[in-house]
Image (tube, rainbow, N blue to C red; front, side):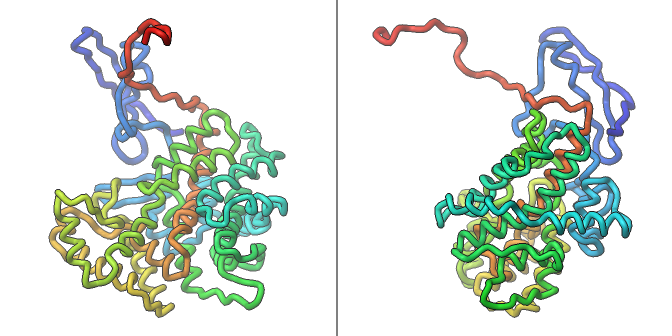
Length: 433
């Protein structure tokens, strides 16, 4: 992984009169970092950083984010260009291999993914072991982990060919598993994938077609789905990606690592954000109630918070939201959906873009706001929103996993702690406590 040491900083510890020189590393973009790997061995002290917000856990060449400027790059390519000009499978190839594919590479990769979309027939029996009302994310998490029991022929992460096969299998089969989780939750039969369809089209077909009639795939909806997948493909070292890397650092097989990522993504503070947007819109109910809830959001003493506005990383406009906003309006106009909640959402968007409070606080609508609206318009229940996120993010997770495995500087993850429990004490017999 390319990085260089431009200089060093001297850290002085006043309470011990110790000092240590630490190298400063520079990446391609972004701030320099202080390499603290020798800090503990030199000073018998380590750093404290809850949530790792000021700690770089790895070197990565996949994704770069500049939250202040609203920049998101995949392998150097702006997300806006990829979403407008590329396809999800092209982006998947880019993240996995470092460069956009040429025609021959794209055809080979697309063919390989398309022809691996089926899952072992016995996997369908796993679904029948879940309760009918089980959350689709619970099902997806369990079944993804079980893939290692069916495809254990190529899970040697030390072997380059095995890594490639596992990566492609996960990218190919995740939409099939997600669609099966959805169909199971609504009591409809599973649909086999269709090799004649593109990646996004095939996913829509598996989710919404039924044996009794022909399902017509709207190209506007398919294009919107492809953009949703692209915009959620990777997002640097977030909670779920870090989980995948941490699990992978122990040598765990890739299916188990992705299942761990799904479990992390399920949290409402992470992948569940677009589901929280719809729940918020349900709480607001009608356009007449918007002002009341906006006032509640502005009140520091009121616990109510608006979901889908602002972003922890982006202190400017979320670059993904700009693409998603356009796609959102295209889908709503094409489908002509009449839904009070969507009307509330559009009114909320107008307020956020004009209200001085939102502008001053930079609470712009983010990608979760628009993706939640689009998915609802498509007919997905809110319980499927995070599942769709997992389908997209699998590409980023497995690319990050592959990069980590191939990085010789990586070690098994082992964060430290600041112990605050009791000091050493003697055991007291139970009769004397």
